[in-house]
Length: 302
Image (tube, rainbow, N blue to C red; front, top):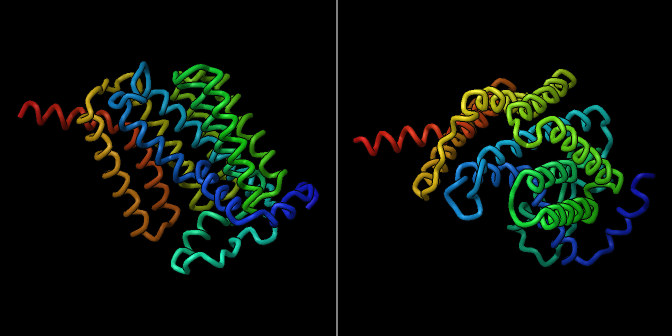
C-alpha cells in the first residue's frame, strides 16, 4: 500500500523484545484502558491526592464526552472509508519461547481486526490525552502538553511497529483526533460538558444512520445517556473529600456497570441490548455521586 511508505514491511524485522514493548505500549490507547481509567477517576474525584481540586469531576466528565465523540467519529470514518489493514494484521508475530497458554493473551494485544483508516488508537489517544492536557490542572502547561504529545507519538508508532496499521492510518488518526478535540474545545472550553456530550451525540447519530451495528448503537446510546444524565446532575454533584466516599462511589459505579454488561451478554449482545447497556452504563456513571450521597446520608441518619 502506498500510504505505508514501505515502513510497515521494514518494521517486521525488528527484534521480538522491541515488538513486545510496543505491544504493551499500545494498550495505553486501547478503549478498555481509557474508559476504565476515566471511570475510576470520575468515581474517586476529590478523594485521592491526584484527583483533588476545583471541578475535577466535571473535567473528567468532559474527557468522557470527548472520548465518546472521538469513538463515534472513528467508527463513522472506518465504516465509510472501509480501508483494509496491512496483510498479517490479524496474526500475531510468532514467539517460539512463549508458553502456549499465553498465546491468546499475546494475540489479543498484538493483533488488530476490522478496517484500518483512521487508526482508532491514534485518533482516541490524541483526543483523550489532549483533552486531559487541556482540561486538567496537573503540573505546568508545558509538562502536560509535552507528556500528551509523547504518549500520542508512542501509541501511534506502536500501531505501526506491531503491524496492525500503515503509517498513513496513524497520521490520519492523529489529524482526526486533534481536529475533533479542537472543535470541541473551541465550542466548550472544557466547561460546557453538556455541549460536549451533545457534539458526541450528533456524531454518533450520523454514524448509526450511516451503518447500524451493535457498536454504533452502543456509542449512540452512551452519548445519549451522557447527555441526559449530565442535564440532571450538572451543577448538582456533591463535593466528596474522604476515601470512604470515593470507594463507595466506585462500588456503586462498578455494580451498575456489571449489571448492564451482564444484561447485554444475557440478551445475546443484540442492538437493543447493547443500546440499553451503553446508555445506562454512562448515565449510571455520571449520576453515581448522587447515589453515593443518598446512600451515605441514609446510613448516617440511621
